[in-house]
Each structure stands twice: as C-alpha cells, then as structure tokens.
Amino acid sequence: MFKTKGLITTGSLMMLLALLTTCGLSAADPITDQIDAARRAYRDGEPRVAIQALQFAAAQIEEQLAEQRLALLPEPLSGWSAEPADSISGGLISLLTGTSLARGYRQDATGAQVRITITADSPLLAMMNMMMASPLLLQAEPTTKPYSFGAYRGIAQTDATGDTQLSLMLGTRILLQLEGSQGATREMLEAYLNAMDLKALEKALLG
Image 1 (cartoon, rainbow, N blue to C red):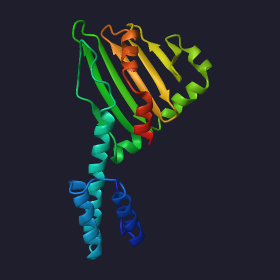
Image 2 (image 1 turned 45 degrees about the horizontal axis):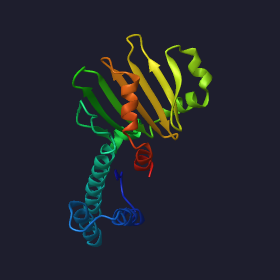
Image 3 (image 1 turned 90 degrees about the horizontal axis):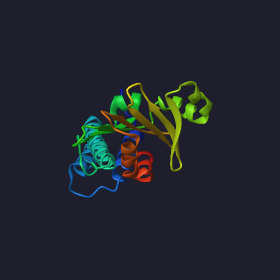
Image 4 (image 1 turned 135 degrees about the vertical axis):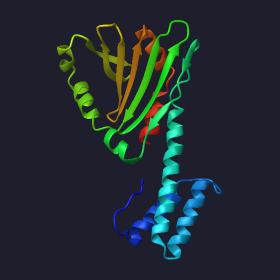
C-alpha cells in the first residue's frame, strides 16, 4: 500500500506514522507492534526499516478490511451450499480493477448456481454508469432490460440458454452482479439480493 521510490521525506514518513496510529487499533497486536517498530526505527535514524514496518502494517490492515467486507456476502440460503468467498483489494491489481468480492452458491437439490460479484472503484464502471444514465441504450439489445431493486437501478440480461444476470449500481462507484446458471431463476437471484444489506455494503466499501 505504501510503496516508495527513491528517498522519502521526513514529512511524508511522519504522515504515514500519524495515519496508521489513528486507525483505532487495539494495543499488543502485530499491526501496532509494527507501527511501534517503525517509530523506533525512525527515531533511531533508520528510515528504510521504518518504511518496511509501515508497509507490513498497511498490508495487515488491508487484510482485515478484506475479511470484514467478505462477511457482507450472504451465507447460503436454506438448501444451498457456498464456496469460500474471494477478495481482491489493495496492491497493483486493485489500481487496475478496483476492489472485487465474489462468492458462488449451489442449490443442493437441483444444482442451480448463483454467483455474486461486487466491484468497487473500477475504471470499467464508467460504461455502466453511462448506460444507467441513458436507458434508451438498453433497448438496442433485446436480451437486456432495465431493472430496479428498491431504489437501486440496474439491468437484467438473459442469454440464449436462459441464464440470467442482474446488475445493480450502488451509487456510482459500486457494481453488484448476480449471475444465475444451471437453471437458476430470477427469483433465486432476488432471494439472495434480499439476503444482502446493500446499505451496509455501500458503507463498508466507500466509507
């Protein structure tokens, strides 16, 4: 998260230290230990050691945030099983794709599958926002229709095999997609939508 090139200024290093020490972390854990180590190294005139300690602390904070965000993906509904949730956040990849969360679900009796994907702050969201601002663009594609869920706007797509995908914009920076396959119906997708706290999701990803 805090990668540097060349020399780092005293002011920049102090700003990093101040940022991480105001995160509200409890004492005596690996993160605060590394922040304390960075303070000591900086005080002792070892800025490179301080930077490495801060980078470790920042990576651990990113990991904690990812775990908190993954908890917002719903648990499998009754009669369903789920894969472990996946997350991509922080680092170079996130600069290109934004933050991404995903989890797959399977109905035990029928084999129907639902996959939920959440993407935040991706450069690719500009096109989706443009489509939401101009619903007439959707009418050019017969398999794509405007879709809304509560106050959220989006699109519904059905391919030649009957598989359905629901896409919702949460504000302008988060795209929520639910893909159904192997016989999954729109009602199944919406059951998972109803199981999600979309407001909490927005707050966690944008707060």
